[in-house]
Image (cartoon, rainbow, N blue to C red; front, side):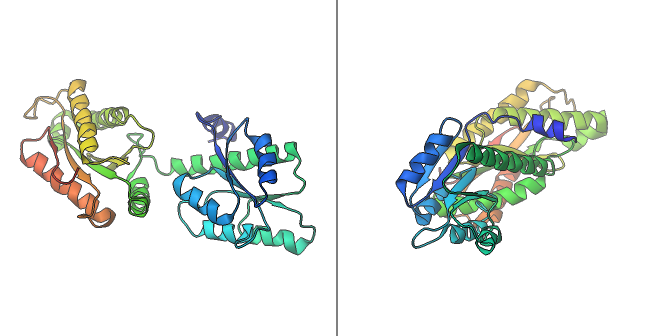
Length: 312
C-alpha cells in the first residue's frame, strides 16, 4: 500500500484527539491549553501521579510533559507508562530547559518520542504534536491490517486473542462489565456440501457483515473466531444488555433470508452463546469457556437461538 493511500485512510479522525498536559506549574498548563485546545481535547495534570490516574480512566492519544517535577519526574513517568500494555504506545513529548547533550539523551532513553525547549513556541508545539499523532495513526493503521480477516473483513482471531486479555484485565481493575458472544452459523457444513465453497464464502461474508452492522457502539467489535464461528466482545455490557445484542444479531441474520434448503429453518441462521464476566468466571479463558457452553446449549436446543444463564 502506498503512503498516499495510508494517509487517506488515516485522515482527520471523527472526534477530537486527547492531549494530556503535565506540569506542576498551572500557568504552564494554561499556556499549552491555549495553544492546543482549538484542535484537541486537552486534559491537565499537575503531577505524574495525577497523570497516571487520568490514564486509567481516559487514555490520551499523546502526552506533553514537563521533565522536572517533584516526587516523580517526567522521565520516570514515561518509563512507568512503557511498562503497561494500555499506555506503552502513547507518545510523550517532553518540555525541557535542558541544554546539555546528556540531558537530552536522557529524554530519548526514557522512551520519549520528542522534546521541545522552553519557552514553548506555539507553532513548534503544534507541528510536533501533529507529527507525532500522524506517526502514531500510521503505525496503528498498519498494525490493524495484520488483524483483519482476509475473507470477511472483520477482525481475526489474533486480534481477539490480544484484546480480550486486555479487556478482562481492565474489567478486573476498574470493576466494569464485560460480555462475550460466541456465534456459530447453523448447519454450515451442509451449506458448503450442497452449494459449494464459493457460495459458502459468500455466506460467511454476509453473516459477518450483518453481525458488524448489528453492533451500535464503536467499542464493540466482532472477530472471526475460526471456520464458521464469530466472537463478539461487548465492553461495559452486562448479561441483560448482551442478550439484547445477541437477539438483534440473530434476528438480523434471519431477516437477511439467505437460502439454505438443507437447514431445518430453510434459511441461514445462527446460534449464539452469551457469557457475562463476573466473580464466578476466572480470566478470559473462563469467559470463552462459558460462552462456548451456552453456544452448545443453543445448538442442542434446536439452533437459531440465544442461550444464556447467569448473573446479569
